[in-house]
Length: 147
Image (tube, rainbow, N blue to C red; front, side, top):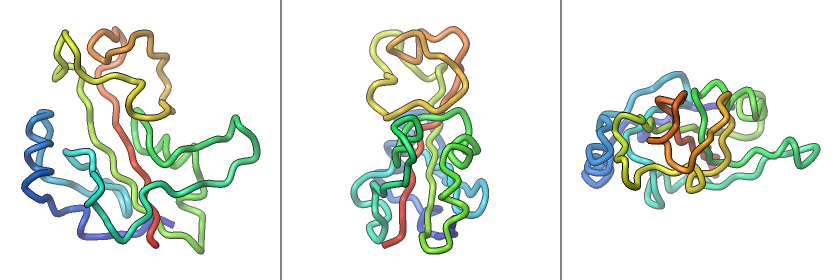
């Protein structure tokens, strides 16, 4: 099940700097219970009381869901892995960080291959978000499980 944790709404100075460097807000916000939009991408010191890479059950390789990746909106995470909301024994938090095409440099920038599986509705055609014609924004997500 998704749980609330106020620590997701707090931003330390380094996370705030990372958010601002990516033209994101340094202020975090709760999108629904257990789902938070953050400006940075988390990190090893973020939510230390949580598993950063929990495993999820899968019936086949086609059902694989990783604890981090890329989506168009947070509902895609919940749709892809219903266990996050339905589990009675496990407690989760999801963070999403916006990545906007307009903030990307034409040389370098955000690349698909660095952030995990894409579970969205588009079909990325290029290595860099900047070069995509039909995609203006994605979210990098991370699912954490309370220890």
